Image 1 (cartoon, rainbow over the protein chains, first blue to last red):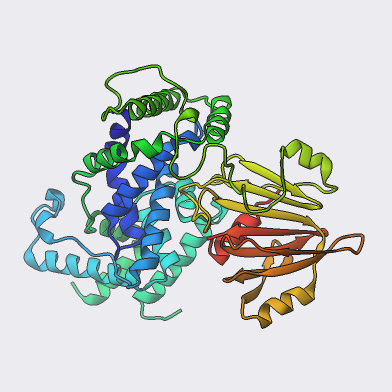
Image 2: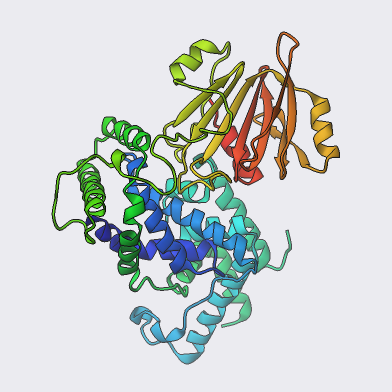
Length: 165
Length: 278
């Protein structure tokens, strides 16, 4: 089944995108629903247009719908240290603890940001979407991605240094 | 290593720190997703078989003209083949598509439990007589504006009633849709101005009305229940109409033409979309 290949190719980024937009909701379920809807909508897909941003728009829409119904606000989290990448070249326990603490501190600040600030940072740094993809997925004009990201980073810096915007 | 130093490192190298956080985020896995999607699609197939003919023609026709990318064209060709196989297998009662390729009747002859193949988006809402966009252009005395947004596909239906034009799009998974099945987005363009009194009446009846600005023009964001609005045409006639309750509405007037965008968009999404009209 040709479509299954597409699902396999994009499933990870789809689930991560859903999770970034609605951490409290079931990202896997949102991604699954999005793939089914994308399949149904394939006749509307413009040949020549890139598939990934089109799919991620659908994923983001599904995740947003779930965020509306999930209600509660839940932040992104750092994964358990057990699967830390091996290139960490065996740091001393003290260094490892500091690095982990700094990471947690930064993520906590990100989680305190407003949804749109958190989403633009997540889209560019965590999902590593291009500016055009980020604009499509977050439904903002392409020309404003840079300025929104820079404003979001400014507010993140404020949080980190204890200044409330 | 002091706390101060770790903070200044963050300040100096927020970029790297953010990428580092990104590579350490707990993310749900996608294990088994492809299998579940396949199962869902197989379950959807009897319903799926009825891609409305207008959707297939409009969507694919436009795609073919723009298809410079060979690999994606191949991908689409594979998808189209899959759709055909799905339609045929659904019609004759087999489960799995993609194994055999049969030639059967076109999808338009297959029944649909939800939207009849002949029902264009917006049909049955009393929007007026269905016309082509070209005929509508000749009939109305103003320039018809369309949204320029990658998420909005080709226009699916146009209705004309007096000096009121209604443009309808079918459901699109990238848009929140409307409260009406088979209708994704509705844009009404009227040669006339909103009668301010009718807006006041709306507010008095408890509808939430918020003044907004759409690309420099004054407008209203209308949230909630059934609404009744009246317009004053250039010749002074009064046009009264009940809105069809397909979702929230953004109402604005530009160069003497009133536009109303209806659907389940949020206020900001609606304004952003409205500002792409050209």
